[in-house]
Length: 182
Image (spheres, rainbow, N blue to C red):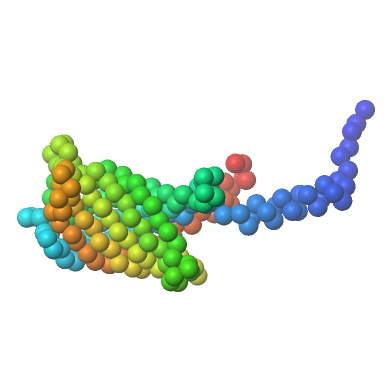
């Protein structure tokens, strides 16, 4: 005995609604590749060179927090480069906010902290403050940055400032999953 599936109006409507919903729901994470160009520092660590470029990749994610009915805005970061020779940074953690209510709808503020080592030994921390505007049409981002270096006791050793430029890394399900096999 063969059983045939006949699509009913309700089944077709459910499939259309589900497809439309899946396309309109954001992934809740934005990946941005940035280039920080540090141009000056005061105070400055001996041996630091300027201008200096740090490459960053950030994931800006949101997570619903039931306490207080709000969202936790978390950041994951990896970077390469430090103006002080021999300093290596761990991936940073931090937070971000969208400045929609006070500034442009595409303006963001980011603060993140990472641990620093030199010669395999703990050296201190790096605190990065980023502020940028993203262009919704092109995915480009431009802004300013301040990168602070502290010793293990929390004493500020260097505060470097500069500009940043970058782009949103788009995620296209059709490119990442060409056969729609999730």
